[in-house]
Image 1 (cartoon, one colour):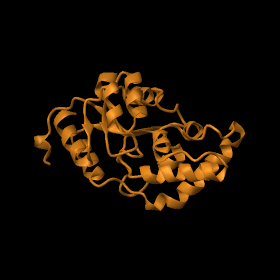
Image 2: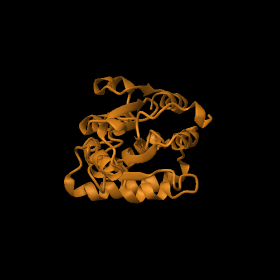
Image 3: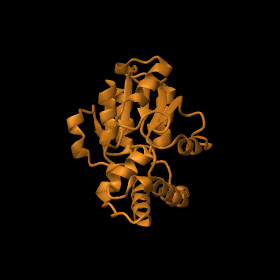
Image 4: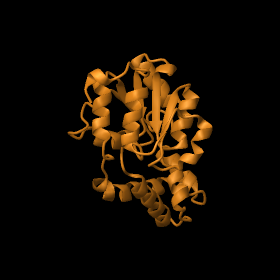
Amino acid sequence: MPASSFRPRRFDLIAFDWDGTLFDSTAIIVRCIQNAVRDVGGTVPSDKAAAYVIGMGLMQALAHAAPDVPPERYTDLANRYRLHYTQHQDDLSLFDGVLPLLNDLRERGHLLAVATGKSRRGLDEVLHTVQLRGMFDGSRTADQTAGKPHPLMLQELMAEFDVPPDRLLMIGDTTHDLQMAVNAGCASVGVSYGAHEPGVFHALAPLHVAHSVRELHDWLLHNA
């Protein structure tokens, strides 16, 4: 879409969650959580229970997904999760349409950031790929700040780019993302194609819930 058709910016900084929002990884993450819990002898969570914790920091997520695993086994649990995830990470990819979406937002002059429950190492591995190098102006991960829904990720991004809360938009696929935006005093948009059922989003008052990347793209071009 030509730049001349873009409307003036409502938000200077747009922060995206990663897994389930930009990256098509929800199903594999669920299986990796379940396999890790099984490996350490815990009660294997349901698909819904495993999907619920996506977006949290890893240790917080695993502890929530496996409440009967004792804390002294959390390190083993995390290592098993990482092992299973590494075995499948080459199977993962961006959702169709994400790159054109990001390119159009950059063309209009938005600052772009990632706010994710992934580790810094894990996020850097994907951001350094050829197709994403230089795409994002900033990023925060749960292991360098605080896990969602604590607002620290967004607060640090706002401070880094000198953007007030009313000029930041958070986009994510879980209630953890949307609650983080509420806690930071920022607006949010939910996407329904990730980890959480969209029916639970409305209590957190997102500006919109997009049911596809194409719909998200169109909404952002007309409203962000």
